[in-house]
Amino acid sequence: MTSRMMVTTFNASVSLGTALMIALATPASAADAEHGKALYAPCAACHTDKVDALGPSLKGVFGRKSAALEDFRYSNAMKRANLVWDDDNLHAYIRDPQAKVKGNRMPYGGMSDAKDVDDVVAYLKTLK
Image 1 (tube, rainbow, N blue to C red):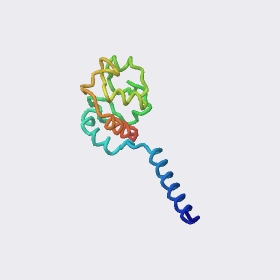
Image 2: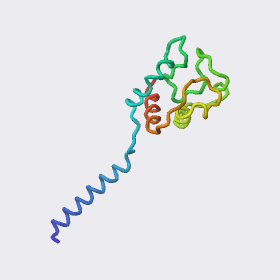
Image 3: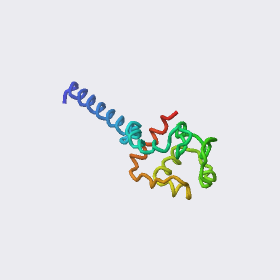
Image 4: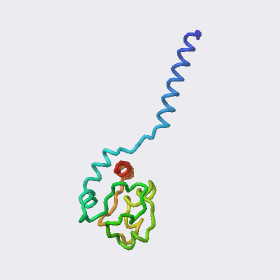
């Protein structure tokens, strides 16, 4: 093998190796906030900024303490939950609200697709 062929082979290997490292470092299923927004659309029927909304506003929910909005009447279960809406708690609640906060009043059965849950959480993080 000539030195030129060795350099070409080496460069191809480095390029392939670099591409592989980038691919492995990038999450294959990065959350899609736009898809999360579409999935959230039915939730917006209750979770609005209106005073008479059935659910609390979810603007700024990420990082907020559960049952923290003064202008919403939360269930006793939600008041006792004492959660901070971080990644783990939002994921668990969206997957199965009754399992995460037993006795909450939200009439929602949960979301089973983990990718969809990731996307909704990504969208909720954009609500400021």
